[in-house]
Length: 415
Ligand SMILES: [Zn+2]
Image 1 (tube, protein in one colour):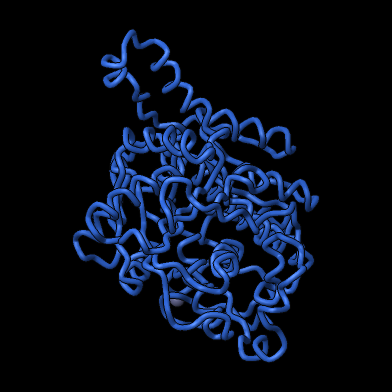
Image 2 (spheres, rainbow, N blue to C red):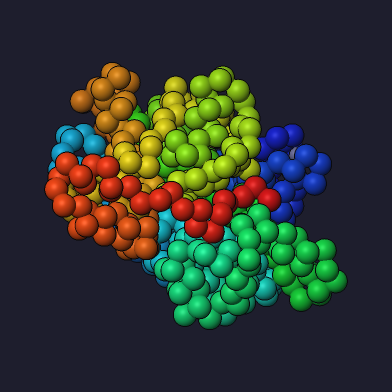
C-alpha cells in the first residue's frame, strides 16, 4: 500500500520503488505515504488481536518487504509506581537495548529489499549497535565509523556483531566526513553502499512510528494527554506524530492528539532554545556536552518538523541538567525497578517540572519514553557510583556525585 515518498518541505513526490535519501531540491526529509483509504477498507485495528508482539504487527502500514526482525517493538507500557496516570514505555527491552532497533529494523529491511550490500553509519551510540545487529541478521555488511572514545558497550557489541568498525581519531563530525568521502568515491554505486544516517533515508521514521501505534493500542485506542520524549535527532517524535495522523485517517483514533513534549539536556538544548524564542528552526548548539550521549545532537536534521509538532500539539520543550538526570536515573531504578538510560530518566525530570508548573494535572494520562537500557551506559554511570562510594559522608556526596560531562564520542550530527 506504499504509494510514494513525499518531501516534508516542498511536498514533491518521489517513487518508493528504489533507494532514496532526502529531497534533491531542498534536502527535506522524505516521508513514506500509503493509500490509507484502501488500507481502511481492507484492514481494521480489531485484526491486530493475536498477532505477534513485534512492531511488524502493523505491517499494513509499513512497506511490503520481508522484514528483518529480531523481535523489536511492542515493548511494555508500565504503570508508574509513583504517579497514578503516568506510564513508562520501556524501550530498553528492545533488541540491542534501545529504541534504535525499530528504525534500523525497518531501514535494513528496505536496504535488503533494494539489493543494497554495504550500509554505512557515522555513530557514537546505540544506532551503531542496532545497525550492526540488523545487518548481521540480514546478511549485509555494516560499516560503522565511530570516534575512538565511544562508550564501551557500543564499540564491543558492534565488534561481536561482525561489523566493520573504523575508530576515528576525532568527533562524530569527523566520522561523517569519512562516510561523505566514501559517498563521493566510485565504489559507492558499484559496491551498493548506502548511508543510513538518521532522517537521511525514509524508513527509520517508519520503524519509529510504530511507537505511536503501540501507545494507542496499549491504551485501548485512546491517546494520552501527553507524551514526554527525550529528543536528540527526534525521529521518534516525528514518527509518532505521523502515526497519529495515519491512525485518524484509518479511523482507529479520533482527531485528539497528545501534547508532545521534548526534553533535552541543558548541556545541549537546541530545540528548547528555539522553542523558547518562538523560532521555527534550531540554531547549531556549540560546545554540546552531556552525559546523556543520545541527546548530544547540536542541530537535529528534522528540527523544523519537531518544532512544528510541539506547536500543533500545544506541547512544550523542557531542559534537564546532568545532575537532575543522574538523580532521576537513580530514583527511577529504586522506585520503579527500571534501570533507565539517562535520556529516559530525563523524561521524569520533565514530568516533575510540568506537574509543578501546572502544565499537567494529576489526572492527565502521560507517557514517558525510556529510550534505552541503563546497562549500556555503565561506564558513565560507574563514575557516579564510584564517587558515591568514595564520599565520606552524605554531606560530601552532594558535591562529588557528578561525573565529568565527558565528550564521549563527541557530538552527534548534523554532518
Ligand atoms: Zn523538497
